[in-house]
Amino acid sequence: MKITTYEYVQKPLTETELFIPEKPFYCFQTFIRRSIRIIPTIWNKKSVQSLKNGEVHKLDVTCVYQDFECKIERFTINMHMVQGYINNNEKNIKADICRMLLEEDYYIRTKEDFNQDLNDALKEINK
Image (cartoon, helix red, strand yellow):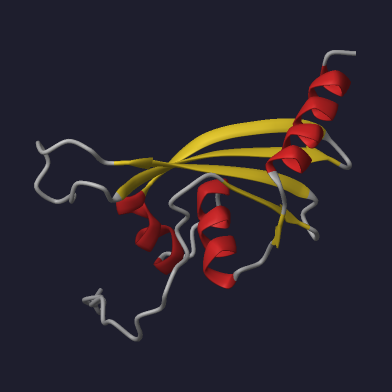
């Protein structure tokens, strides 16, 4: 039996600007019905050569859902993984948030709005 093998080459198509918040960012996704808080962590050490001092190196994300299911998710997105999440069409919450930022698929909210949603969800969960 003979088979054909292929070499997959990663070829750049375009460079696209991706919004990465440099201060706490609050938004809401209407279709998914989730409130989101993104808190960037700024790199301030000199031990890793690939990161520059003052660059965002990870995003701490909190998502609050209150529609069909009341739940709260918290996770971290490392900046070196963002390009892979988008280019590999990954299907996970981290990739979803990266695509949301890329496509600007959100409405900006205030810290107070997010905290109200978070407190409402906590009350519902603790019933």
